[in-house]
Length: 459
Image (cartoon, rainbow, N blue to C red; front, side, top):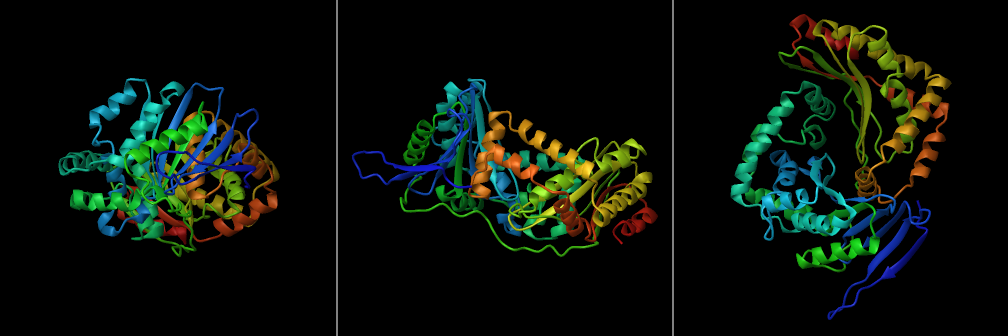
């Protein structure tokens, strides 16, 4: 992606003001779909996508910190901090924060991932200044007092318990551990009961100061918005909080690296008294920056991305062995995962695993048919567009793109990338990824003999 136009803007005041750099990254038609970026003095980036045809706006702030930035003793700190930023600032109590957005019919939330955290609010376009003020206040002025840390600890422990009670969710955390072990990417985003109980207000405050510097943040806003107005409001909010202290500071670069996952043929079983056995069979995938990710997306869609996919047809439609069966990919800065999930009766687990393994082996050796690839390309193009039909999804796209890639790609360019995938490229990535010896994670009430046979699925 190259910038189609750029200019430098500056604001005057009684004091000398450092210059903000503004670029038009994607030129939309008549302003629609136009993506612009301003880098403020102090390293804060503001990216907007303008859509005058809608009446809503979603405002978010992305932090370049996730669970992979935690030490073992700090596991869960990023997610804990996400909760605490809603608990109050010098200007607002926790009730004030939620009431302000509720009073205008807006939605407000946050999420923590392994490599980033996002806080956002979706409101009517006329209420965008309020959303900007509230979210910026949370990010720059959180108090993180001992009392709130103690109260929220109970809520987070309940969230961990809720996840543990959902084996269909918990098995993906187990699979991450199977593949990454005790590495930060293998630890749960929520932390564990022991690590959450051990976290103190002082340790969380230090984590906050280290990772919520403006150079680590990206502001993203999409909808019926005016870029210059958003920049002015964000700048005013951060300057009011004294957050833009170093005018020469530059944004940190996207993550990069060359991590290699060497886990092959590992099996982890977590015994639970559940009605179903929940399994993930998978192997190392692709980093999110890998040029082959478009072909990988087509492969994943054809294998387990819908009702016409191979896995759905073979496991559910033809044999009725599972209600839910699908494949997925997870791409990180320097590595990735490919997995196949299925939930089935414990007595059927070995049949399900055999069928899944046979399909993966067959596609690795023989590839997909041209018809399957054509159908998957069409499905992926359609789902890409349909998934961007609201301002929240657009905010996520431009915010994550800036934080993780340092660039923006238009929807048309994305569709062109998908359409350009060739059968040979799909078959090549299938040989490379699916040809590896898989690993396996299982949660369920399997008996000793059943458990002993699990290694057959990865042999």
